Amino acid sequence: MSRPSGPWTYWPPALLDDFRKELGRLVENVFEPGTESQSFAPSVNVIETAQSIEVTMDLPGVQPADVQIEIKEGQLWVSGERKSQVEMTGSTVHRVERRFGQFSRVIPLIAAVDVDKVDARYSDGVLSISIPKSEAAKSRRIEIKS
Image (cartoon, rainbow, N blue to C red):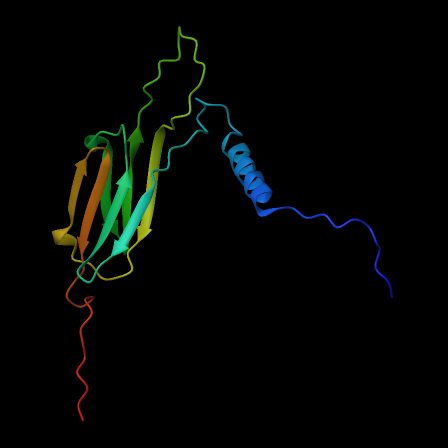
């Protein structure tokens, strides 16, 4: 049994990374800017501490009055809208890369929380939500008896 003795083609990792980036850009730019298909999905960080779940969300250009926060069915629901700041009528628009439109993020809460003590703050385009864990969800150290 023999193998064909054709040339071995090696793709360096950097070339594959470039290909992945270009493919990602192609997928992102399928829709023309300014169409209804253009969507805005804010980036989110979720961090669990011993006492709470801390959620931060990037919302530059969004007014706090345009954001709704709910906790239901063991999930954090954040929705709202970033309005377009580009006037397209009577203008020549050369490039629109900033995303706008309605958004909705649903984040499963991994522990029982105290809904009455949730604190939400908005500063410098970042929404910060602190969700305290309920006493039942907080970890406790168990002493071993001998």
